[in-house]
Image (tube, rainbow, N blue to C red; front, top):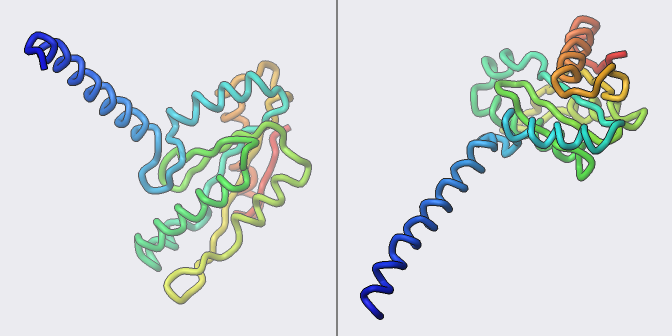
Length: 183
């Protein structure tokens, strides 16, 4: 190989490898390492895009009920299993019609293009199914809040999240197990 050609190619190859490493790190930073769901930053960009394209979108907040008790009683590995299972159930429920994310701790978020009338009930039932774990059955429960973006004065993700948050706390206040849609 020509020495001048090698001297010219080596820096380009180095920059290509460096670029690939940075791209991989950025993708990793946008995914929660435990659940594989998008983190807040990764989810937000996708959610804003989905809301712009689908005026009937719904934004959901999900908070696991009694998670600290589950963690304290069965251990952190059981808590991690509950988080992973919740993420899998939420991701599956969203399917190709939305996107799920993990905000942190036991808080999850989702946006779907169009929320079916029975959609929240189906998700609530799914999230309340017990989790088989280490020859036992762990009780899972979650409170859900939803906001139909079309019902907001202006379709913004920030306002939808605030309304979904208020609806989630209303659901927690009613029964510690349930869902509520902001109106």
